Image (cartoon, rainbow, N blue to C red):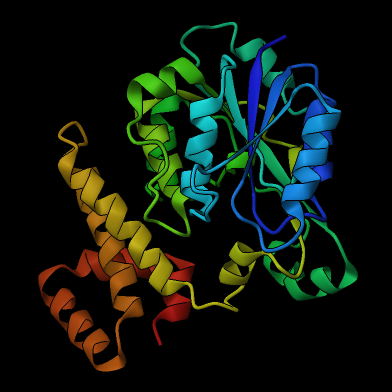
Length: 314
């Protein structure tokens, strides 16, 4: 058995948070569930208070000013309060499956293992949600397609390894001591979206992450009509601008990190440029395309390999 602190940021999730909490409490490896309520507009705070009073392992926190600070700051507060040897995250509208920590229990016996990632499945909370978002998620796993050594995880995450795949923060478990020692800051609080993706990029660079169960789900993504990130991914909200901010942040970090090899820095810079082009107004877009076709064709080539860039180009 391992000693896991599960951090659940709570915002506008009164319908779902009880299921999330109970799915974690059902697992013997869960030492504590840390709820951080982020000034929800619904009755989520009341539901969290009831959960904290009902279960000894559930601890409830809010930001000191009781305000809304976004998912990054909310997860950071949870990390400050966590006391377990290992950290896992869970969105308030998602839930764990019974096999969630089966691989971790064995892998973390090796001190060299600093993190373990698994596969995420999909659960549609209603027929309407399935109708709206099935084309986006279908019934596919979010997973890494085969076992990779830790040194391949960062290049895979930034799209340097072809069809590497993805893992979700819901299916990740981290050795707390390693994260505290090697990752600073944790989540970037000025990123309102994709702060978890940026966190995973840096985490996979600094920590040795190993595959756990990647051929079947260990947690489930709950899809409903009000998912903000789902609306972005499905293009109900234009995604390019948020991805520009993400890759701008990643590029800024990569250029400042002396240990990152030059070819990887260049690849990240080109990914940033490709999204910057896709998000530009039409006239500026074409002037940028023309300039990079002459000066740095790889920036265009990097974008054309990315499906979101191709969708947003015109």
